[in-house]
Image (cartoon, rainbow, N blue to C red; front, side, top):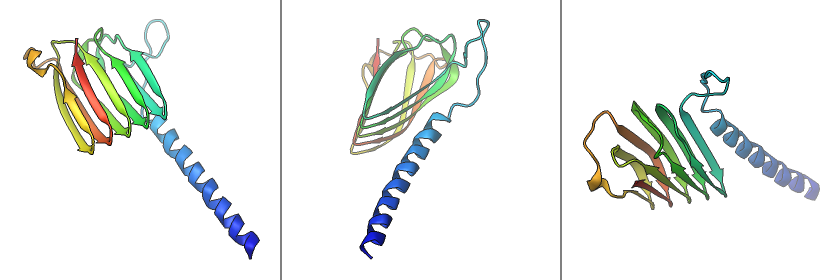
Amino acid sequence: MENKKTFIKYLVIVLVIIGGLGVLGKLQDRVSSEENSEDGKSRNDFFEVNNMMGGSKKEYNFTEMKGGIINCVMGGAEIDLTKANLKKGASIDVFLMMGGAKITVPKDWNIVLDTNNIMGDSKDHNAEDAVEDESKTLKIKGTVIMGGLEVIRY
C-alpha cells in the first residue's frame, strides 16, 4: 500500500512537470508566420520575449514593426524600440506574473495601455511629451499580475 502511494505521488509530480513544459512550448510556438528577406534571414518585424525566472535586454530596429509578445514569469525584460519604425496597427501582447517589463520607445509614438492589472501596475512615463500623430500608435495589451510594466519615451 505504501509503494502505491509513493508511485502516485511521483506520477503526479512528473505529470505537473510535463504539463509545465507543454505550456512553455506553446508560448514559443505563438509566432508562426515568417517572411524571408533578401539575405535569407527571417524578417517578419515581430518579436517575442519569454523569460521565466530570468531576464533579458533586447534592442530592435525593425523597418516596420508589426508587434510583439512579452511573457515574463518571475523575470524581467528590457525592450528598446527607439530605432524601430512603427507600422500602423502595431500591438504588443504582454503577460507579466511576478515580473516586469520596461519598454523604451521614441518620443513621437502614441502609447495606448490596455492592461488588466492584478496587484500590479502599468505606467506610461512622459506621456505628456507625446506628439499626437495617429499613424504612430502602439497598443500594449495584456495582463500584469503582481508585476510592473513601464513605458519610457526617449
